[in-house]
Image (tube, rainbow, N blue to C red; front, side, top):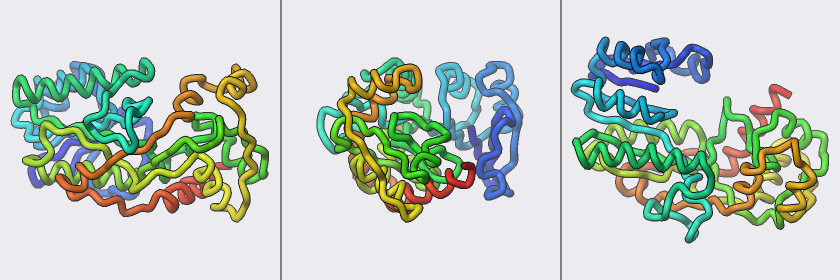
Amino acid sequence: MVGVAGFEPATSCSRGRKQSFAAELPDVKTAQADKNDPAELERLLAATPYDVVVDSVPQENTIKGIARHAKGLKHYIHCSSTGGYAPLPFVPADETAPYGGFAEGWMVKRVLDNLAMNLFLETGFPATVLRPCYISGPEMPPLDNLGGRRTDFIADVRAEAELDVVNDGQALLQPVHVKDLARSFLLAAEAPRRSVGQIFNICGERAVTLNRYLELTAGAFGLKARLKHLPLEEMLRKHAGHIHEVGLRFLALHMCFDISKAKERLGYRPVHSVEATIEENARWAAKGN
């Protein structure tokens, strides 16, 4: 969670377990607290009257706590996910698509998004919901061919191991670079009149097929991906006990989204191409393999 108070430097709040991007943000102050603890959240918000709060991993009690205790708050921005649109009723899916029915995790996100929007409608709580697609880039383990983020995926790619791919590999995937996502938070904060009370899809410029994603991942090392296409149910049987079933079923669905609302209302333009994002993510992950 990040708070901004007037013209003061931003404050990043965490439990202190992860320091991603800390070196790139030397001017950001830090506060160590568990925002899911109501007493700690109240103490944190009472100490400083924040103008803007960015909630990167929202929970029901934190949204309610921020609404209750953040005095003078001008803008609350929370991070959701485009995954809740699956299965997509149309492609590319925009913010009018039904949301939250694929699996339990997405149902929870629907509850959280609705809570933020209902608080806006009922009390004027200045909420904006951003829904990024698959987040990629430094510090983000790449999506693997089985629908997870297994640590040996890039090692398999570099060893030119045969990779099982669900169905025909034509399912669409649309990553967003983590820095483009960060920029979208700033754009929303800078334009409260155009963003408060709104939901925005935040993604890369276009989608690529799963086949193309794996080819680009291998191509980052000058290699050719070796792909073996298998029906979904056969893959589930073959990898039973080694993968998360929901993840593979999710990977088999199209993820392709319309970002025109964010472009028109926020001025959002992805700086990183989808192809460059995939290749950069693969090379970053290779450093740890």
